[in-house]
Length: 280
Figure 1 (cartoon, rainbow, N blue to C red):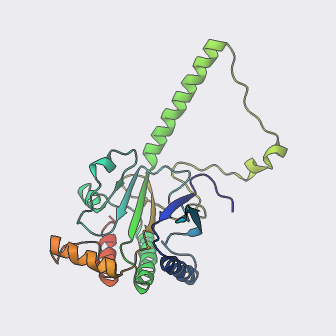
Figure 2: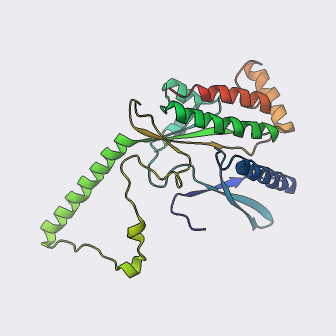
């Protein structure tokens, strides 16, 4: 399998027993069946491989997944959304990062919206509803919607600034050395005709066969954006530990609080209702 930079991501799994490994493999088999049934029309993550690394009798499992974001279009803002308001705000430390992962409370406070056409919205919700039904059957909860936002106009400005900087740097070199760099060239034999197959894309454009989680903003949106939407963190089953966590949080925050550790059916209902409200 050949993949470009940023097209895959690695996730370390906190697996404590062989039983959990079998549980994960069973889940992945069922997930594959679901994807085939949906003809690939899904928001579920694409698992590509899983590796076990053993160091001094300690096993670590690495999961290789397709990156939901683009390797070409830079994501300017991202959210991890669960449909819960309890403890769902990015920490101060997180917000200091170059690209923070914001959460539900941040989404609400910014009054963020997703501007897509009615047709695209219907497609997204159809995928989401099928995927949620599958996750409920598998007794999965605590999953999130990963939302990445590419600001097309900002990307154009950034690209223009970079070109101006590069142009200024080249002019300075010419003045200092009195020589301009000769353009780099590669023989057609050396590149195997790659340039003939490459089609340059304009600002905000993408290949839907490569960026499978990407969605264009609507024509009448207040600003041009590309959204990347997919489900993540779908490896948590509602077991004894989660039941105990739910009870503890219910005592702390009250039975009516929107805590994340709830029964799969309840989690799915709340999650679906929240996602329907993120659209403009």
